[in-house]
Length: 241
Length: 241
Ligand SMILES: [Ca+2]
Ligand SMILES: [Ca+2]
Image 1 (spheres, rainbow over the protein chains, first blue to last red):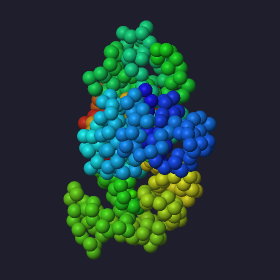
Image 2: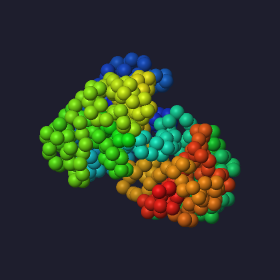
Image 3: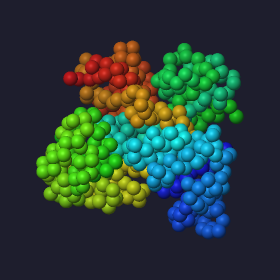
């Protein structure tokens, strides 16, 4: 299904761009048509299909995301995920509640300004809460006390100009002929240059640099780090088509 | 030297807390005394030493950080780092310029709302620019497209409830008897349980999971990941006292 982004402020816009860069289908919901237009190049006022700076169509619903009708227009009932990034925490709580009622299987991610809103958003049905000011503040402190750590994190999260990429591959997405092989047998490093830096086990534990004799099981997720080229080679060789 | 945090809004407060948790000496600069007091328990209006919720003293200068006099009161000339997290980008540019003029060796980290402010802040003398909305938006998108990646990043950056920690150790901070030893000889994993997941070479390259026969050199920085207990054991055994 598609992803709905409610609120096209700075958070929402950045989320939109990153989702599109990853090939997701996205519908934006925003009440301020001027805000959408400042983002879009093609200025098609009547229709809700503008064109963004890269020349591709933006699918947008102009309206208040706290209205069920607007969420339904954005296709909430068949969407796979919804990001609510409205400026007011109370509005994000309201959108989470409405969206959860309309689609019990939806993955809901909510922005919050205040720590006290976190539990409310989770109760309202959000699966995850993101607090940009907390993350930003923590980032600034780490630049002082642990600069190499933050440089590494920026690098692997794609925030830095360098092109290192951290990718995940679930066992179920791995080519079948690799099932049953140990980390050593998978031999990802010498075949692609990329490195397995972690493995999330189905039971929830994270193995950092999993041992060479570990055999990934159904439900496990590999975390693989490499340059763009290494990750592409990894995808081609290990991911099921 | 100490760290100055200008602006005690949500970003500044979070940075303050994380700096204190890491043992840094911090002086806050804020013009709104009410804002400081909402954070502090001890309400000592005259003096600029309040007490925070953990019962420790907060050193604060009440005043406008865009004034040289206020920055000097906060000890800018002998500080090692300054974080400017004022709400307006223009004010952060001004603070960066002033602080750089007063202390050429200061590490300056600036918050920005707008992408267009980044180059201005760097020209003004900031060493790093942090954009919380960009980071937050990217975080929300990753929760949709690469959830295990973001879970891993949250874990190693300390944003998650779990207690995995990523620590850095510069060659110069490493106990002398380990100098000249290879990654294999250092044997960090079996001695502490922690894992070397990266190594930043002095020349700037990052080695992911550095090879066992690599011998760290002066200027290199090790990136070590483990539980709190593992990292503590690592610090005790490998860091110079
Ligand atoms: Ca927004
Ligand atoms: Ca602030």
